[in-house]
Length: 77
Image (cartoon, rainbow, N blue to C red; front, side, top):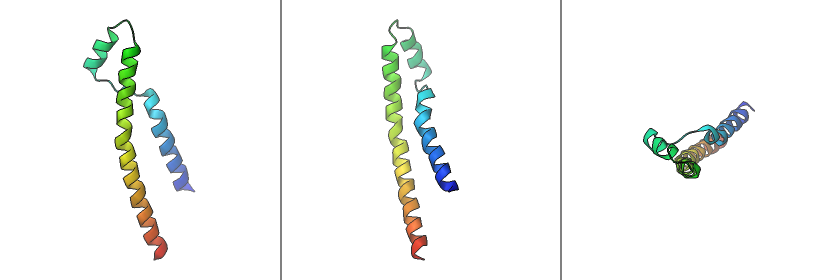
């Protein structure tokens, strides 16, 4: 039960963190904020956040497969 709760909190935190993250470097932000139209800055920020998702998905997938293989070994024993 506790593992399920911890897993749910972890998943929710990964889903909510990108809403508050500012992924631009300081130079990119300075150039983009000087423009009158902020849609370009928002688009670049969203693109950076989109690219950041894939490493987390890969690490999560590897972790899941390790967890599943260890669980199968403990169920067999």
